[in-house]
Length: 191
Ligand SMILES: [Zn+2]
Image 1 (cartoon, rainbow, N blue to C red):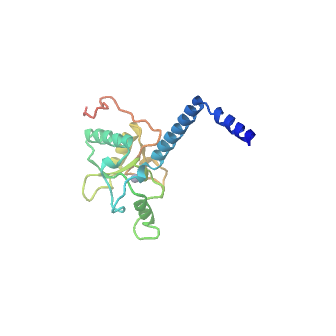
Image 2 (cartoon, helix red, strand yellow):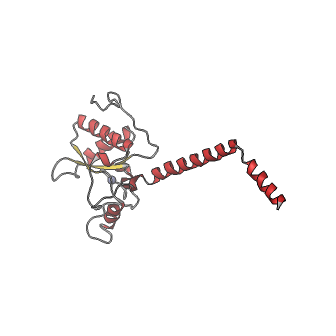
Image 3 (cartoon, protein in one colour):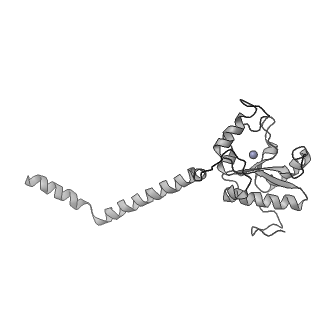
């Protein structure tokens, strides 16, 4: 009895205050890492959409960097006289899945080749020519837009290989860098 108590006592004494601080500190760091990793992974799952199949075209629904890229893209395109409009930004996974079935298990033309779209990550947007009845029939218009997009660091679906080409589509890659051409500043003021 005496011996066990002595051993216990010894074990307790081993936990010195420095170790407690280290243990507490590493616990705190672990929690922070889990929190930030979680917030990165689940960033698009936070909001609940009452009508998840509806098309969303607000730039506010994009990730900060992609939103900035879309705003810069619009400024440059309009400065070059291109009558461009944003048709879609963020897409819920439900809507992506729904669009995927179009032309496959549902009628209509195929509009997407993937279930795993950057739209669901808030990193992509689609454009159209702001010209009723002729939104998608001007290839030269989309080529010019694709050139602008690529010049500022966006990936343009226009250049995807045939069969996957997506003329109205632009996306920002995770490690992509937004490039401001001469005459355009980050402040948001026009040239
Ligand atoms: Zn798209």
